Length: 195
Image (cartoon, rainbow, N blue to C red; front, side, top):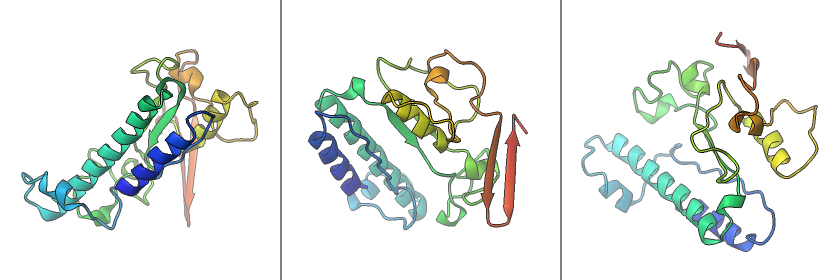
């Protein structure tokens, strides 16, 4: 996690004078559960070893995100950079953390809310209002058309995603998607509105 943050900061510094796209896929808190001694020791109040390692991984993730955001400020491009913070799935059952996805049912690799609901934040100071919320689910598919709109690229009607900017700015109402579809192996799932 620290290495990925180091590399991201270097990429921001190297590209500060031109448009860039940075995909930063932190793996924390994914397995294998590993943490630095310093992060582990900082959580001495957590007695359970697995919970403590998991928490220490979150400390490292938080520090890494903070370093990236600070690099944007240090390079003077914070107000001109759209940042998405997302996860690809809910927590996994095999990390040994019961209730990890509470109050939602299910885990990673399931199509219950605990498996598919995850954080999705967008930040773009001066361009998006602070605290804006979208009235329905957004997906990873929405990142491409949103980033393309920011870059001034023409809309691509063949993409499945939706430009989220009008929803985040309050220019469009309702949910960006009426229906969402998932599939994995023999499983097929449809979400239609709240069903």
